[in-house]
Image (cartoon, rainbow, N blue to C red; front, side):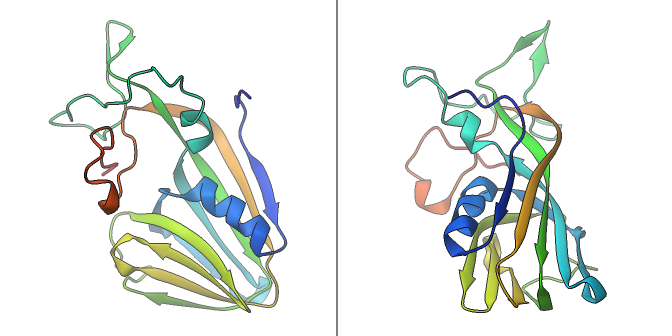
Length: 179
């Protein structure tokens, strides 16, 4: 299946949310791009997500090792004379909104003085709580009445040569850090 357009998903239970969590794995989120609108019972954020659904389409014999990291730049794919250096994956901005939120608690960072980016590892529903778990033990805990999540890709995807990296993937030679 070819995925050329953006994704638009919604979750109404823990199983639905697990699908959104898979799409958001390794998304980069700036704390300043998170907001809680208490009067509307809504928590929303914008993320820079890795398009795993496109990376999964690569042919098994395609090279997956990323090029050497450039000395400067933001880590996106480098172009020379119109050619792409190394394999190209994709990232895209996406908006994520949780409704029916009664409260929000942060652990390991603050919205005002958080790190430049947080790397989202997973999203989990547990009873009346949704946890957004980030690398470095940072967590957003949403107290919810029910699972109500909307997720939508925003704009066009852009190329990147960096495949997200996980600590337990240290032995995998084809994984590179997005930061």
